[in-house]
Image: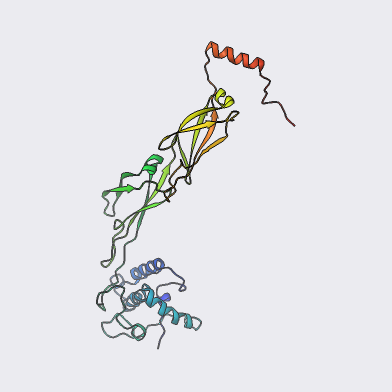
Length: 300
């Protein structure tokens, strides 16, 4: 009996392949040897049957495991050339297939038809959209318009759930490329890119913002109100706070996907007034006279 190398038939180097790789290899070989394209070659028709037979076996996990046991035991032997085994008239399955698998191998519960074409699911389509931090935090519905395969523009409504993570994908089932031989259509995969804004920046599940202080607030310490993404928070600032220092507010950041929150991290920036009243100018001059503080003085 001739042993048929289904992996070689699909132009695969070995059996360490994923279902998606098997499907892709089948598509390529089926297009290459389809009888409607190669009308002058009798070999193409037989090869096309072998390609369908190989995919029928390798696309089903149970039959693939059974075949792999044989393949592993024989792969060390000389098996360099593609070989055919006989078929009955009108049969798409070879003697090799019938001996080991019979004619009833199917991937669904329907009664099989020997001459039925293999259904192939359509390919997925990938795209991406930008959303603001606020929209991602609270959730939003957005409409996107894409050009369909027929060249026409098609609009989709996308429901973005609250707390979606940056880079996460939303799947619209059946909105991808159409299937072949009655197979299901692929899906539309939409990658979410969360955009930072002037107030908040997102890093993982932590939100970063800027806390502006006056020189006297930073020097004396104070209590300020700061806006997190969903509420106002009261925050104590100790005396001597410097520009660039960070204050962490626990549990006021972005959603962590487990009903919790990251942290809100506020970076202090001390602001100097550009215009002074006469009284403010006098007070600053008085401070200049009495203060011994010199940030430029070298310390050892």
